[in-house]
Image (spheres, rainbow, N blue to C red):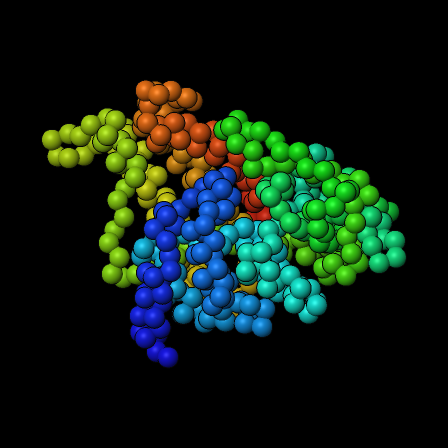
Length: 394
């Protein structure tokens, strides 16, 4: 089938299968869980999963779509054209799935990947601990091998979506007698077991997407060790590269697409007014909006260039830290700017006198304080860039 014919097929398919309620363009991850529990979301996911299009480039033998890079680009373009949300989301698709495809055994792939593609199983990440955040290799959660089981004891924190997850991928210490980067293993474990306790953490924004997770003789099968025993640091770092590579997974823009409206300018004109030339009334606000938009577009163009230059099956590398560093900083600054442009209306927590957009602006400003911390702090990203990208000495 030619690419033009494939595009027409995809265009018809997304128009007929994507419900209007799923054509939102984007949704914040803290709001995604509730949205994806709706009937419309399930219909959209099931339709896509039937064709493997929840994971369009993954191998067909594990339920993926088996699409080429060009075909996947067309699918992304047609979904972006109608502002369709991804039919499925979560750490299964973004993180553990690609990691299993690279490091997992055939049995692990056959057992876990199809359920990720179908959306039947949700995953969470067991990395950070109260004493091991930026210094992740300092983790102390122990896993002792007893027969065909690992027995886990310890605590994880900032476990995104743990209260909704079916499985966790975790870094655990299996040999405490060696240097800290050694003696770490990468295991998978079910969350629905007596030895796992989950306590959601309420954030300043009012939501609770993160949790404390406690292990009290929790169990993980020996068969769910990913990679070699005591060599999990290599697997764990690779997974983080897949996570950070998510910053580059933007839908390629169609040449026929119309330019998007500038959201910052729209807010500024609404609250600050316009001058005689139709520009934002306050020069300082114009400069702030222009600077933010230029930086966001520069990032978008850079990520698109990386996608265009990547090989068909190229895996992400250390340079993904650049996208995490720049992308998270711009996200935080964007929330700050939207709140600032609204003035006092961007600082309201709860009031019937203000709109939903104004109330959300405050929550977003508070919520996005954390984006330069989770997923690896900006300081960690700068260290990785210095050592692994620029080749600077330790």
